[in-house]
Amino acid sequence: MSAAIYFIAGKDNPNGLNQLRQVILKTVENTDDDTHIIIGSEGNIDLIPDFPATFMNRIHKIHGDYKNLSDAILRADEELQLSCDLLFLHTPGDDIDINRDCIDTFIRYHKLTKAGFIISDHWEYIDDKPGAKPVLQKLKPGHDPSNIIIPGRMNNPALFCHGSLIAVAKEYLNSRVFDREVNYGTDYAVRMGVLAQNGTIFTIPKPLYTFRRGAPYYPGTGLQKQFEAASHIKTSGHFSYTQDLARFEWGPISFQKYLKDIGAFLPDSYFTRKVPVDPTLGNGISFVLPTYNRASLIHYAIESIIEIRKKVDTFIPIELIIVDNGNDNTPNIVAPYVQQYPDLVKFYKVFGMTLGGARNFGVHRARNRIVGQLDSDDVLIGDPVTNILRQFERSGAAVIIGIYQTAARNSDTGELTLDNQIITHDEYLCNQKNPLLQMCIPGPGAPRYYRKEAILASGGFPDLLYGEDAALSDQMLKQGFIIERNLEEANYIAVRHSANTDSEELGSDILLRKNFSKYSFKISIIEELKHLVLSNTYYHKYNNRVGF
Image (cartoon, rainbow, N blue to C red; front, side):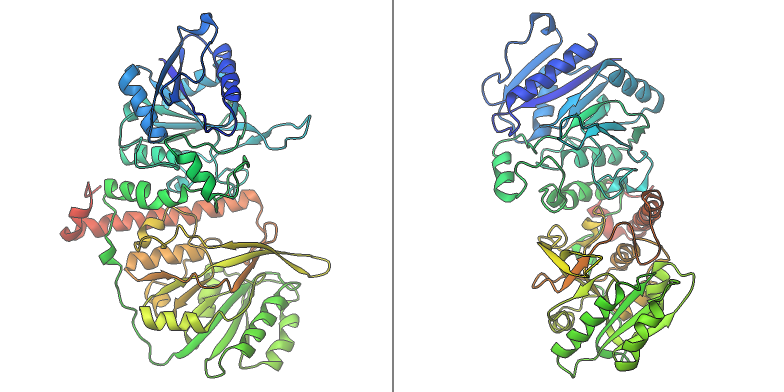
């Protein structure tokens, strides 16, 4: 069984061509004669010439003008007639050490699993200081349900990356998998293309290479300049969810094609369901705040609601419903507020509930038509009420998702420091109206405001300890409800704290299990969408395949 490793060279690579030359030389020296090296140069000349003559029988070069990385790879296959069993793709810009054992192990696991997309655990240099040691990065297994989204690591589920080396089986070297429409999210497009063609993903549970992330480099005519013009991280080597242009391609291109290929796609026209009206509900907002052992923090959230009440028209009903699921001093902290503001602050003590269950407890007691989501370590500012109510009335939406600021709070002084970063999640329902295409991102962002009637009609928040809000959004889109965005003002400040949530203390191992449940729920929704498409012939024309 043979292997080929593809490298691409371009003058716009911010890491320089010499770095790439050194990577290629290391790779050739440390691998055997059955591993071939393919170098694609952007433009009309060979950008990395003069390799030692002893290596030239293993190095194959082509050059040309390429639309993007997928185009370059497909052109290499057309011109060189690649005969390898596995094609290895190195992330452009990264400094990587690949050796014979790495290649042999990938090949051995491919023989055993027949997987179409293979990745492995690895070592990564995070710290640039002299003498720094690489960090072991463990990846999720190939069967993990989160593989339909951007991948997270086992040792850090919040960090989205699967390393710097992937291997693709020869049978998936085609234009469906290597999608020329995708400029920035190539790895995700390849992964979803393999899955759409009934292929599988496999993660080798052994560190097989070491790498240091370089500055982002996107080969293709004009792509690097476009990226640098749009990005604030031109020289950073680390992934930024909020800056990566690939996030505009995951849903509208790669995930949409995946859904159509598996028979789970629904058109925009499906998402028009009207929300049932309960005439007994008030025309204001009920903020539901579940909490778990946040006695030292919860007063900030309560006081922010009190300030909102002072600013908003007195004719608009507002209430804060606190659902305490913990075992600390929270009841005593909240009691004075309930006594002083009995119409505004409501408190309920519960035991043993999941985060989804605690939210549902509060929703059922909400007196108003709109339910606002507030976490007990976060605060509201400005007027998060008036414009939201107007948008609900105007649009008929079941959910409206806003934007938020991020901040840190000094645990000793309580001082809140804004980091001047507003998170818009502008990849979510900003340039298209189909919420189904957003199921491939971890969550739709915050803050979220719901019609109470729509929550109940969708079955309430799923009974999860984590990710219950994203899961509710998935349930609502399955029901065909309208989901809208509000980008006018960041009235929500998200204050993050280590691994604590409003359900329990979460270490990375527990968070990994909670994420597994969260994304298993997402997969179940997709399976239900397949049934929906199969049972309604009108939707067959929107899918490339129908059935199971």
